[in-house]
Amino acid sequence: MVLAETRNPPIANAVLGTIFFVLVEAMFFAALISSYLVIRAGAGLNWIPPANVRLPVEATAVNTVALLISGVLMILSAKLFADKNPKARWFFLGSLVLGISFVLLQGREWIGLIDVGMTILSGVFAACFFLLIGLHGLHAITAIIAMVYLWLTMQNDLIKVERIQAITIYWLFIVGIWPVLYGLVYF
Image (cartoon, rainbow, N blue to C red; front, side, top):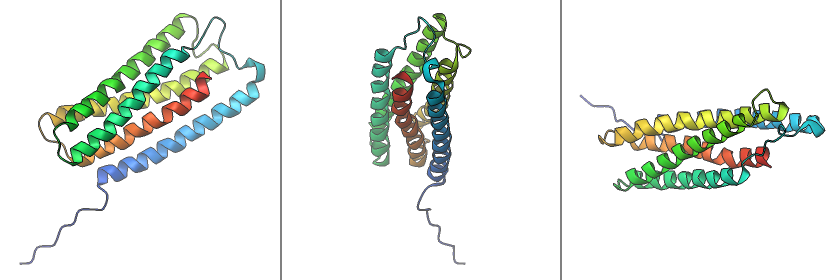
């Protein structure tokens, strides 16, 4: 009896699925950003934060740097994981911790803005702010949940490199779209 030869696909299913998902998400964010720009252009002088609200540009800049470092650590983790280097776990954990810190600090920012009176009902600017930044935050939280699951799986050595590659693609999308949103909304 001759056994059929099994070949690995050129791109793992998890990676290919994540690439397609990220492409759809990129189109989604492109539509949101386009809508944001059209609304901002049409709002004219009404395009201002509510009175007594100052966006924390500097704190968010520091938070942005933390998120970018998280992306670099994720890239290093994926490379080391592919090389079966045990240090990969620690780079992954560093990326995860910085990602969690980013979300927590953004959440703290939201609480501060709500405390001074900026809510989604405070005007067009506030509604667009919470929509864009909130959807990014939702995506980041989703990725962090997946990263926590993968971190726990790593502890039992039950993880495949394709899963690390897939979460790396998704995380890099989240990291990459943030500077665009930060630049548009905060300046």
